[in-house]
Image (tube, rainbow, N blue to C red; front, top):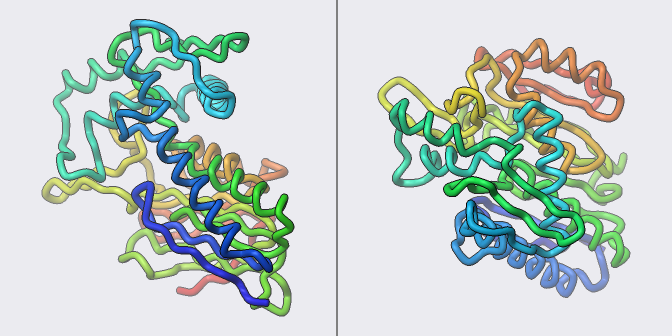
Length: 312
C-alpha cells in the first residue's frame, strides 16, 4: 500500500499531508476540514474568527471561547511569561504595524513602534479558568497565535491520524514537519526531512535530517521579508525593541517529540546568538537542533549530528 497525498494552499503556505491507510481519502478529507476549521477559528487575519472576536473586545469585556482555543491562549501566555516575552502572543499590534509578508508592509516610525510596545504586555491578558474567558485589558491589544498555531495544528492532525490507525505518514505545514511512524520508501524506516538553505532561493537544501516519528520545525529570516534598499527586515520580532531580532542567525531547526514544542523553542531561542543557541541545545535533554548563521556556518547539536547529512 502506498502513501496517499493531499496538497492544500492555505494559512499563507503550502500544506502537504501524506498517509498510508485503506481509507486514506476519507481521512484526508476530514483532516482538510480540521485545518479549515482551525484557520477559521484561530486566524488573526480574518475579522470573523473566534480569536478576532476576543481582539475586538479589547478594553471592553471578557470573551468566552472554546476550550481548545482557551488552552492554547493560556499555554502561549504561560510560555511567554516564562520566556520573558521572547515568545509573545500579545504581539499582534506590532505585527500588523509592520505587516511584513503583505503588500502594505513598511518600516514604521519610532513613535508608532513605541505606541504599539505599550499594547503588547502579556500581563495585560486576563484569563479566567472557571468561565473560560479571555480579556485584553487595553483597547487596541490583539492576540496573535502565529508563533504556536501551526505546531498545535500539526500535533492535532497527528493525534487524529494515529487514532484512526495510521502507522505511516508525514504532515508538512510549510516549514513545520511532523512524521508518523516509519517511512515506507526507506528500507531503514526513517523519513528524510530537507532543510532549506536560508541564503538561497526556496528549494535549495543545505542538509537532510533523518527522522522517525518526530517533529522538525524550522524558522528563518528568509520566510517573510521587507526589503528597503540594502536593508532586509524579517518577520521575527523582539518584543523589547519593536524591531526584528538582530543576531547572526539565519535559520533555526528544532527536532522534538511534539510540534508545539518545536514552535516554542524556535521562537525563544531565535533571540540568542548562534553559539548560545548551540549551548542551550546541548544542555536540553528532549530537544535537538541545527543552526545556520548568516555567514552560512552550520552548527548541529551533539545528539543530532548522527542524523544529519550535509549537502553543501
